[in-house]
Structures are given as structure tokens and as C-alpha cells.
Length: 82
Image 1: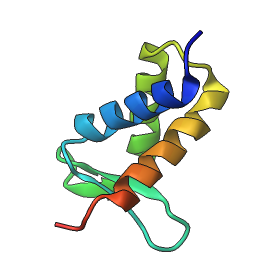
Image 2: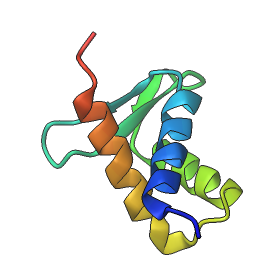
Image 3: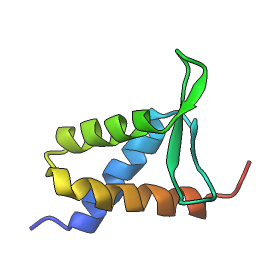
Image 4: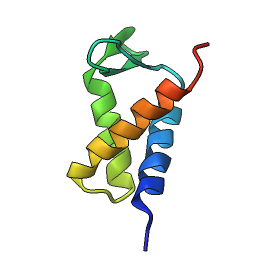
């Protein structure tokens, strides 16, 4: 039996590592953004694709993306600002 919370947390950490620290949360609405080095802009949609791809690699269902996203937000809020 797999502990899903641990799996969601592991996938969330993989997403954060994949974005190389170029990931942030806006204060209003807690929208996750990621820096796109090719376009030199902060993108809202790109992080959704990264989360979806990492969830697919971990054999998670589409509805489990929301759980992973929640863990990403919790992890980023718990980290001190550099």
C-alpha cells in the first residue's frame, strides 16, 4: 500500500527541482508561476504543464494534480525568502 501524501510530496519536490528555483507564488490567489528562460518571462501556464508531466511520469491520475499543486504551495510557503 502506497502512502499517497508521501508520493504527492515527492512529486512536488521533483517539480520544484525541475524549475531550478525559478518558481514563485503570487500573493493574490496563490497562483504558481515559473520563469521561462527561453522567453525571459514569468509564465502561469508553463508550471501546469510541468506538474502534469511529472504526475504522468509518477503514474498519477489527472485529478491528483490538485494534490501535488497543494504540496508545491505548502513547500514554497515554508521555505524562507532568499
